[in-house]
Image (cartoon, rainbow, N blue to C red; front, side, top):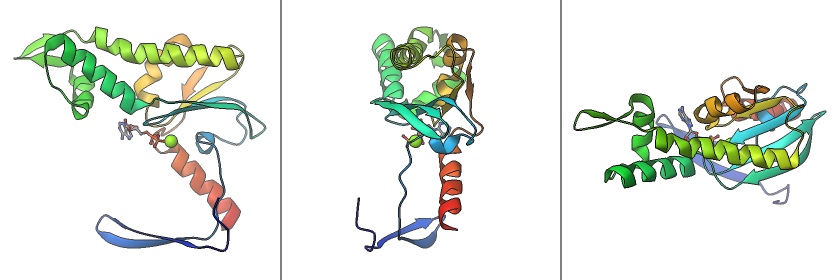
Length: 186
Ligand SMILES: Nc1ncnc2c1ncn2[C@@H]1O[C@H](COP(=O)(O)OP(=O)(O)O)[C@@H](O)[C@H]1O
Ligand SMILES: [Mg+2]
């Protein structure tokens, strides 16, 4: 970590307005912890863009955290590759949302994509088998958060009836860490 007396300046623009941030102090929190209320005891699964961060929380303490090196971007790229290979297409990652929403049509003809949805189910199975190695998943409450929580929710909830998605999973970490920062520094 950088020395405390060194201030960091960041310049950026948001909606066309130039902003400057001065960072005077930092606090390090595990991914996912921002997304839950302080009373939560259980397992938190934070599915991000390139990592999935998992931890057991007990009395606001993190136990046995681990991280899988995959997230939505890897899943999207595997999903689109499977579809491209099967149908000789050259779809890109930014076609995924549309296909998940509307299905796949080629020259107007609807195509089955259930074989490609297997990519998401397989990843959920992988996460669950890692959970089984590390925790007592039958007896814990489980929360899903992060940008991939909605994408994988259906497959998760089918396998784990004790799982639920946090409110606003796309922003739950950011909102939670803002609160942490306010409670420490404001
Ligand atoms: N509004 C949204 N609608 C659908 N998917 C989203 C949205 N915002 C983020 N995502 C998905 O979430 C991913 C990022 O998740 P996030 O938890 O922010 O990642 P990380 O914590 O790894 O930076 C994106 O790659 C995208 O797949
Ligand atoms: Mg994240």
